[in-house]
Image (cartoon, rainbow, N blue to C red):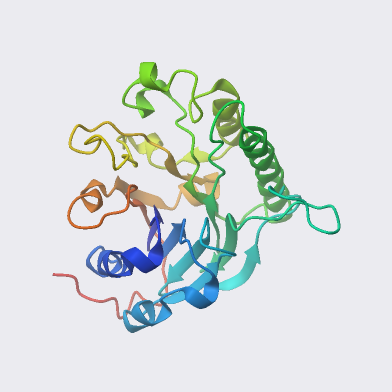
Length: 278
């Protein structure tokens, strides 16, 4: 079973690239972030023709998360308990909840597609929102693990955090900026302290997952590692291989992120009739 996560940076713009990748990389389940559309705007037809069902969660032209799967999708959940909102208060005084988290169950796995708030600047209100959001996510994951202790669970997506110095091309460039501040790194480390495993780094897979479009960042390999698949020990023990699909940053009209992929040793309904990939 192959599972990938990818910030696609507008699914309507990149639907062809995404579907092509799913097919040639033989992906069973894809968690998407930054789809930038409402569910009724998602290009379902292209995915369905390729054999994938889609669950999408979006509220406007920003943010948005989704899953595409060749396997049955169950127990869909938008957001998580106590997820904070952001923006102009609603009539009831609460803050709008952004489309940043989508949970599903597939073949006994609990999977989350996450688009963690960017934080913008250290003195921007989006920064404490980011930290609050991560804290609420940590509590939600802990609660799920307590109620489903044997369940393999993974939180995947764009965390907008580079947890170590070598996860950015230049710490000097990022000094005083978000993504590398100590509170953000502490929030990321908290998931590891709780027992989650960085399924790629634990297997020696290194490399960037994001390169800005400007200033020739990709040709110069001036990137960041901010996309992750963090799994519980029950999930991690199923992982037999992992990779960063760096080549998906090449070619025409790429996303500024690339897929992060894990292979799991798990029997699925597709095993008897898996498509042949040439």
